[in-house]
Amino acid sequence: MVASVERTVRPATALAWIAFSQFLVLTLWFSASAVAPQVAVDWRLDSSQVAWLTLTVQLGFVAGAVAFAAIGLADSVPARFLFIVAAHVAALANLALLFVGAETVWAAFVLRFVTGVALAGVYPSGLKAISGWFVRGRGMALGVLVGALTVGSAAPHLIRGIGFEWRGVILAASVLAAAGGWILWLKVSDGPHEVPRAAFSMHHIGSVVRNRGVRLSTYGYLGHMWELYAMWTWTAAFLAASAVAAGYGTDWVSTATFAVIAVGGLGAWLAGIAADRFGRTTVAGASLVVSGTCAVATPLVFGAHPIVVVALFLLWGFAVVADSAQFSAMVTETATDVNRGTALVLQTGLGFLLTLVTIRGVPVIAEAAGWQWAFPWLALGPALGVVAMIILRRSPLAARLASGAG
Image (cartoon, rainbow, N blue to C red; front, side, top):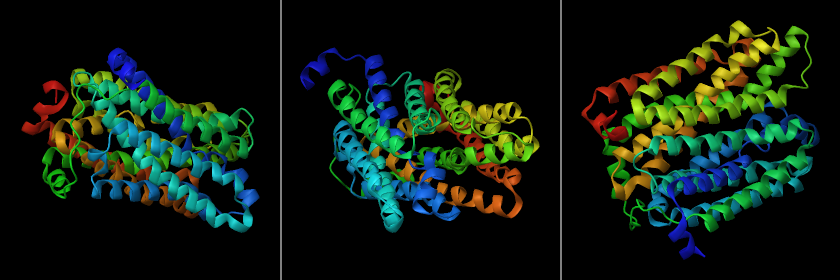
């Protein structure tokens, strides 16, 4: 079957299958967070423990990324094999949440941690698989992949919004993730630009760290990640608090949250097309400016009509992830072939480590000053990311990006 796939798959077809697989597996990320109000009641969680439903996934992802980079797994194991194994481990860990109760709630955090570790094998291997299929148009291709990740991350909110109770959301996400692993394995072969597998060497990590292009790309990515997951995690809470303050109901919040996160899929795709033509640093920098401005503007719409609040958040959701794929593309274009996978894993690992600060910080600020003032400080990340993009744009390294577009 694999041989047949290798003869018939084209880049556009491979992109579609890889993106679809990524979409299915990434439904796991917010599968527990999307139903936090329900599990909080059943498991008797306080607000801090609710935050840890997401934080433990981030911690697991960081731990997995560091471990995979340390042993060179991303560059020594075929991307497709790593993807299917990691997808099934994550799906099983998520499914096991159905057996957690108030007396064993500690197990939920362990399982969410394991899910994060496994997802560290899914996301970077998907990026590496796409890089094996595209050189020209890589920004668009990675944009599609990040778009699939975005919509997949949003999907549990939609499943919840159409009436599933929390166990149904957990079960659905687990089944979809397992299916995603098999789809990529059966439908896609290694791409023609896939680099040969490299034996493990600590030199890979040192080479990545010394690479200025990778460092600047990662600085931009860190600015982006400072904002992204905190915004995704706490959008529903902000929308609900704003609606209550204005005297409106909150039945619409889950569906609106899905739309706010999912619209980022469109942003990632369109930004990828634009970046291939006008330059990655230009498009990433512009996205950072728009998303940071939206973060600063959130206090101005708090308590307004839900249409006004959701409109701002849709713009923010569009821009906040539009640049993500371009930072990954920059790494694939500035890292050497033998350590491309390690560079991607290190970049994503550091980014997710940073999210621990902002995901935990937002509710702390909300408790102290109210939800109206929970988000403006997130604009610090985009501001620093813009500086990194300006420096990279002016560097000779920009000639390596987007076929010379910068």
